[in-house]
Amino acid sequence: MSDLNKLGLAEARDALRKGDVTSVELTESCLKAIDDADALNAFVHKTPEIALERAKAADERIKAGDAPSMCGLPIGIKDLFCTKGVPSQAASKILEGFKPEYESTVSQQLADAGAVMLGKLNMDEFAMGSSNETSVYGNAVSPWRRGNDDAQLTPGGSSGGSASAVAADLCLAATGTDTGGSIRQPAAFVGITGIKPTYGRCSRWGIVAFASSLDQAGPMTKNVRDAAIMLETMCGHDAKDSTSAELAVPNFEAMLTGDIKGKKIGIPKEYRMDGMPAEIEKLWADGAAMLKDAGAEIVDISLPHTKYALPAYYVIAPAEASSNLARYDGVRYGRRAQLAQGDGITEMYEKTRAEGFGHEVQRRVMIGTYVLSAGFYDAYYNRARRVRTLIKKDFEDVFAAGVDAILTPATPSASFGLGEMTEADPVQMYLNDVFTVTVNLAGLPGISVPAGLDKQGLPLGLQLIGRPWDEGDLLNTAYALENAAGFVAKPSKWW
Picture (cartoon, rainbow, N blue to C red):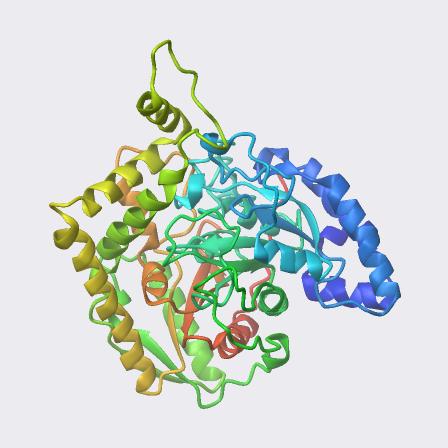
């Protein structure tokens, strides 16, 4: 078999079990694809020795007949996950040279299941961004192009490296994290599947924190079945994370029947934004029609506090970030600035943080510190928290009324060119999260499924939002949508 890197997780797993292919062959195919794809800047720390060692161990395990689903499958790990002995920088200059002495719970669970780590993936610095343009490694680049235009496009953010690597078949799947849409938006931009599970479903231990009440890890895969397989391995209770839920993890793959007869799918009227492109509007209507044809009942719903979600998010997330990022000060690990004669500890903090943090991180730390300061705490932070409670209640009311899932667009547009939304107006960039942040504020599971192409030939995604802890049902609805949409487009290789 040639082009083994083009397989999905389920196909590769089945081929491994049959003995048609070995994990070493799969891994070597991916390592070659990675070496040929430096133009995408997706993999920023390559780990071929670790990969081949794990692949050999996986082959032994498969031979012995003791192999979980993920065993022997080559994947990429976002640079936000701490990986023992491997640089884990969160794409920031301030963590230069940091090689953790421990492994994040999620990457450990994947390793324990026999998954093969190919390397670390590019991302926005500290996961702050929607276009992967804030990384110390430089921009990650989408494998997609607009028609015959050779302008470089964003793979989305913050999990841009993960999105680009999966879409370009550099790995079979990848881990991502989602604080305000950082799995779902890049997945939509590059035509792959990305699921953010319920807050607490995956452990956050060992994942560099951005906003602790919003961050959640999830898989980025080539299709819904693969998302179900990988998510099951990533989930589970972890005593090291106080927000981790002590709930049994179901066999998500076994729940993929594609039967959604009688399911109620809500269409929120508040997501019909002014100026929404006609293509997104049409995609949304088509998605609803597909689910209806599959036997679901489509109902109009209202989520009245949606319009306050972005402002509330951009108060809460920077507030938590300013608190979390206070630990990066040049004292114990990471980068320390060169100090002048007579500089004290205050100068060390100031110079290290000024040098180590990029502009977007500095901007969010300053916003966060401002909204948490004595005179503004009630006016901003506490008010945003109250708004968050109302947003959560909107969803609770809809689900209590019998709605099983909610269908929305995943993004307000297709992928845009790198540099097209520059620093001149950061708010323009923040609007990319308009359909995704509510899900994080309410702690719900959400999945992005590729559903069509725009007139320039770029992927567009639809988002399904599910009930808390009901990822199995959500994945099954997504599976029905995927089958109906029949999205098979791939980027033409130019890199």
